[in-house]
Length: 83
Image (cartoon, rainbow, N blue to C red; front, side):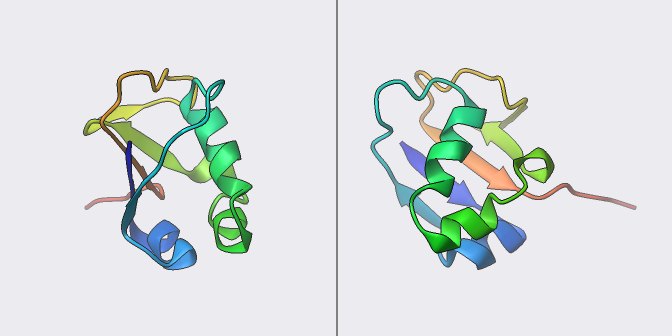
């Protein structure tokens, strides 16, 4: 599965994207963020407050409880403002 990072999430992790093999038992976006946070200091820093991280599965915005089964791409980004 391709994981993409945007804005300060990307800056904290140090890469724009990566391909990962998600372990069995990781079923939701929230579980994926918890798993990613355990992958190292930079990931822990990026996901230290998961409530502010937004996610998209295959370019559609989703809630943390969204199932990730069958996803080709999951993107993580901070809240956005517009004007």
